Every structure is written in structure tokens, then in C-alpha cells.
Amino acid sequence: MSASPTAPSNRQQRGYWLRTLHQWHWISAAVCLIGTLLFAVTGITLNHAGQIEAKPTVVHIQGTLPPAMLSSLTTPREGNAPLPAPVTAWLLKQHGINAAQRDAEWSEDEVYLSMPGPGRDAWLSIQKEDGALEYERSDRGTIAFLNDLHKGRNTGAAWSWFIDLFAIACVVFTVSGLFLLWLHARQRRSTWPLVGLGLLIPLLLVLLFIH
Image (cartoon, rainbow, N blue to C red; front, side, top):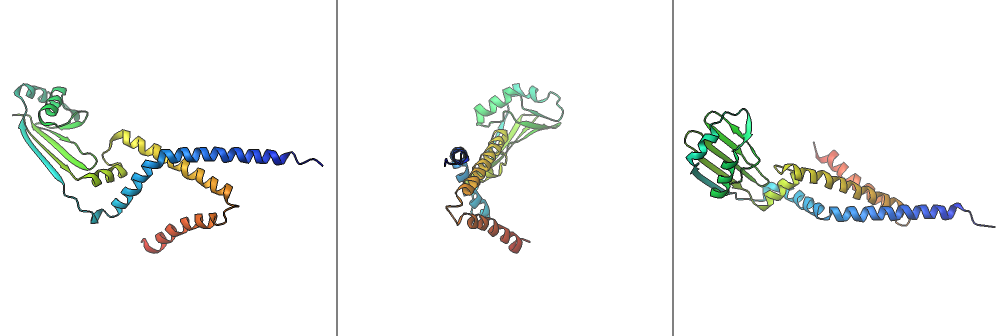
């Protein structure tokens, strides 16, 4: 009696899906490796933010804009607009202040520019009448920088896109891992109890200790 023709077909199909899932799993794991480590470590630092002391480093600069540039500040503007290119170039060269590609708040007497970034806060004020400028930057250190990367705080559009793409890669990694667990569950009896435990523990913590 000949063997059933469906048996090899089923084995071939299962082998195909197994190879495909392994491929998706290891590729997504490689893509997520460094990002997962970063977000895991900063998850701990954020959870203990109150216990991690940080002494901000404050830089304070005062100066005067060249008289030749004052006319560019007196041009009427409505709402928010960037500083003129000659002003940003002078600020960078003279004081190391990078004010390019940021919208400033223009009022009758003053131009004010808020320049926050990950792990730091900064602002710049320029008086229109005499060009007097004041700049202050507060740097809270490496841990604060990494924590703000975790939260996507003041990180810009490029990092925001990275977080979205990283999250998608993590979904691929976990879903492909779930299917691999399902395919190997017969040989590993503890698979589903451990998966259930991973769901049960946070669920009990939420129900019993978070009010």
C-alpha cells in the first residue's frame, strides 16, 4: 500500500513556515537588539528616576549682536519664525549657539528662542533695541539624555520615526516568536504555562496593587 500523498506535503508546508518564521525572527531580533537594550536599561533608570541624583551643568552667556544685524530683527513678523540666517551663523561662530532651523517668538521688543533637547533645556533672548543677548543652557547628564530618548522628549522627527519603526520590528519579533513557540509546543510542555505566567503576573500586579 502506498503512503498518503498528503503527509509529505504537510511536512513540506510546515518546514516552509518554520524556516520563514525563523528568518523573520532572527532578522527582527538583530534589528531590535541594541534598541531593546537601550529601552530596557532606560526603563530601569526611569523607574528609579527619583533615586538617581543628577547635578545639571549650566552654561550662561551674555553678549551683544553686531549693530549691522539689528535691522534684520526689526523687520515686522507675525507669529513664530526662524532667526535670520546671518544671525544664526554669527551666534554659532561667536558663541557656539546652534539656533538654526528653530522657530523663535517675535514680540515688539524681544526675540525669544526656546531650544530644548534630550537631556537639556536651553533658551536665547535678543533685545531688538540694542542687540543685547542672553543665552542659558542646562545639561542634566547622560542618564537624562538616554531617558529623554526613551520618552521621545524633544528628540525631533527623525527619532520619532525611529521609535515607530523600532516598535514595528519588536511586534514582528514577538509575533514570530509566538508562532515558533506554537510550532515547538509539543516538544516543550512548559511553553504555554510560561506564556500564561508572563500574562498572569502583570495582570495580578495591576489588579491587586495599582489603584
